[in-house]
Amino acid sequence: MLQQKSNIIIATSYLGNIHHFFYLLNSEGIVYDDMERYQKQTYRNRCQILGANGVQNLTIPVEAKNHTAIRDVKISYATQWQKQHWGAMLAGYNHSPYFEYYRDYFEPFYSKNYQYLWDFNMELEEVILDLLDEQIKLDFTSRIDSMEEAKDLRKYITPKKPLTDDAFTQKPYRQMLFSKGQFMPNLSIVDLLFNQGTESYLYLK
Image (cartoon, rainbow, N blue to C red; front, side):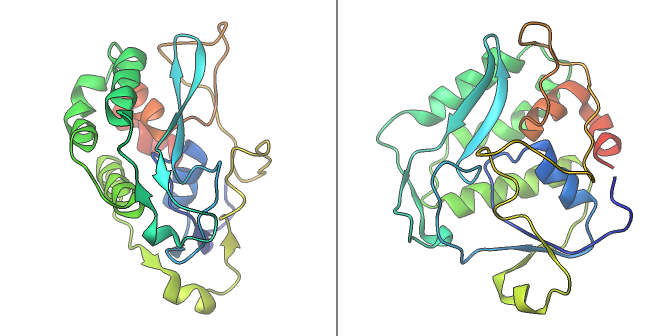
């Protein structure tokens, strides 16, 4: 765990993983980079949940190039990704202990069309923080230069490399579905919420 609360700079993410929310709940100052350039194959438009066959990647299709500012990245509705993602949630978590308790908070995001990825992600983030009963003041890019000794997580929390973080130690919790009977760590925050419910806050702290 963190020895003391520090400042962090973090990227937006789609249903961020447990590592992402660990830092949100255990940091002093939090700045989201809303002016960074979009990067492919990151958690900005991807999350990982647990399905019957193991870890499942859910990716939001976007209309963007690598130089597009993250605030300007548009969501593509050329495919029925919302139906596919919600169907995956139902298949993976419908029988988990807390899915019925939380489903009404998440289901609307898979029927309403958002133009921009940023707005979709940040509204989801606010819902999740409310469910975790955590009141966090979120700042944005304009304050990055004034952040003293901030830990920059923009390229650190990524699916491209294994997680190595002495501050973050994840203990197994009961998951409804297992990949060959093995605990799957650091999935999307929804895996924790649907399986642990109100205990999720204490788990992250």
